[in-house]
Image (cartoon, rainbow, N blue to C red; front, side, top):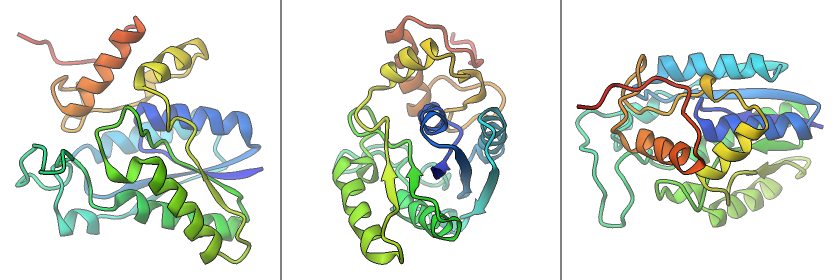
Length: 219
């Protein structure tokens, strides 16, 4: 079994990569530079994770046009971090997962890979619409209709887990959480206050496990 694994460098995609490594013989890792503030750190984590799971190939795709069009606090410093009327945070990058999955499926067709792994979470995410189960189901239908073989499918093994589940299970399986990075704004020491840091810290606290990455001291 050959698979493409989308790896941001965060703990969700790290655990997804670990599952893919158990289920598939040959892995191809894919990371996207979409102009996010912590791209350098995320890319470093990506290559470390790829090396750990012995990916046959690891590629970084230049998607900085997502930053050019703006609309997200992750790429545009002029966008305030707040919830919009639909309770979706401004850290949502417009239709990001759909565009990334399209690139992954294109590569899968070239490689004759049958699976694309994505670390999307429905129940314990930030409320992003492109992390919902219905979206994944719809994308799978599109892939079946729009590819030659029609046999490529998206696999989301952490979709219905919580982040605390990931920490608990991952720690038991000796997943290297120290290689992952979640902070939206810092690249050396995690800020501990952005939405992603807060979700991560909450998960480790609920799991009763110490987070191995460094955080700024709180006053």
